[in-house]
Amino acid sequence: MPSSVSPLVAISVLLLGTVCSGVAYLLYFRLINDMGATSALTVTFLIPVFGVAWGKIFLNETIGWHTIIGSIVVIFGTILVTGFSISRPRSAKSGGIPS
Image: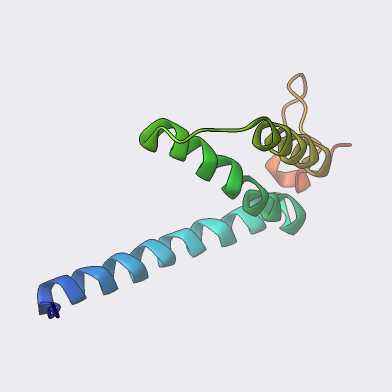
């Protein structure tokens, strides 16, 4: 059964896509400016980890042991790349590189 898309739905989808993408890019470029390109890139490493977490929380999806191991590897790699330390706060002025 074919259906047509109403103008309101089309405009809503276009605005949602452009506004959300635009805000995301502005935040991402600010992150690059504040933390440096390497640290900002690590955000993309965490997207699958959060996708799996949201799937478990909201959709009650099952998570296998391999997914948990993979998430730990991704998080540990992100910690190594960013130089994250709980005991030492990072300075945005230094570009996130520990001294």
